[in-house]
Image (cartoon, rainbow, N blue to C red; front, side):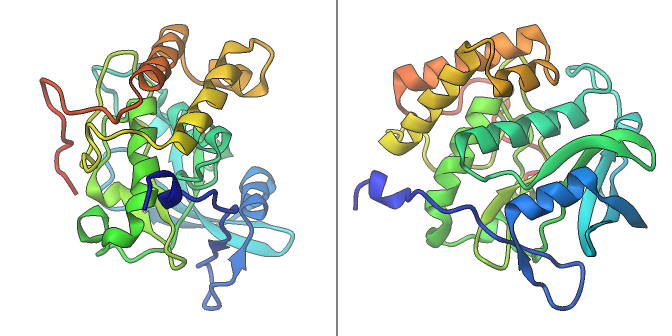
Length: 264
C-alpha cells in the first residue's frame, strides 16, 4: 500500500457530545457555533494536573449543551521562552492552522471572553484518559502521520503522549497547543515514528496550499494569524513550511531536547 493510499481525504468528522448520557454525535460546525455564540451554563471547576489555570465549562446554545476546556489568559503561568499572556492565542492559531490544512487534528477552539476574561475555549473531547499515544495500535498510524507533521509545522514544544486523545469514533485529536509557534526551534514530541520518511504527496499538497495563503496579504487565514502571533513568529512559521516543502521528508530529532517531559 502506498503512502498516499494510507492518507485518505476524510470527511469532516462528527463529534461525540459527552455532556449527557446519550453521547449524540453533532457536527463539527455546530460545535464551533456553540463555542462562539453560546452562554456558559455551568462551571465544573479546574482540571487537575494542568500547569496553567484550566477550567471545564458547559456551554449552551439553541438548547444544545457541550463541555469545553477554558484556558483564561490571566491564568497563564509566565514562561521564560514565550511572551507572557500569549498561550491562549497560540491555541487558537493551532486550530486555525489545522482547519486551513483541512486535517482536523485540533478540536474546535475559539478565543473569547469567559468567566475569567479572554481565553481559549476548546471543545472537550470525550475519551478514555488511560488511552493515549503510547497505547495506540497501528490502525491510527495514518492519522499520526498528519499530527506529527502538524507539530513540525507549528513548532510544538509539548506533544506529550497524553496530548493525543482518541474519541469514540476512532478519531485522533491533538490537544494543548499553548507552546507552539515560537520563532526559535523547539519541536519536542513523542511522535517520531516517521522521522526521515518521505511525506505523502497528499499532505504536501495541503501544505503547499497553506503556504500560498500565508503569502497572500489579503487572505483571511493570514490576517487572523497576524492577530495571534507576532511578526518574527510568522516569518519563522513560513520558513518551517518552506523547509518541509523543500525536503519532502519528516524531520528527524536534532541536538538538544527532542522529547517533552514528562512524556505522558
